[in-house]
Length: 128
Image 1 (cartoon, rainbow, N blue to C red):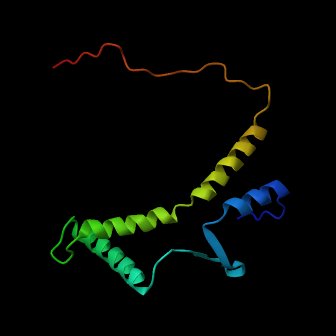
Image 2 (tube, rainbow, N blue to C red; image 1 turned 90 degrees about the vertical axis):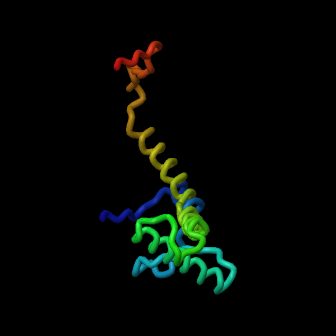
């Protein structure tokens, strides 16, 4: 992978503002951490139990089980953690970077000559 050694100041400022999901613990070993807000050891244990139960349900190919009394609660807990892991801020930065790169890549005198739009027909006939 090519290493970038120089960043313009505005890009560095955007990166500092938007790269917030991962916290670098050991840059040499490329080790990062992510913060999960939990309210104690019970929360940690319930999260581990939810993940385990969801995996068991997936392996059994069922949405209910005698061993798992409230599967929807467990699935909801796991999906909540997944939502917390989505890097929204980083995606916003990538959009800004993409826009900046594409705006520089297109010559100013290049235009789209035609637009094509697909529409549904006004009259839809069904044949049997």
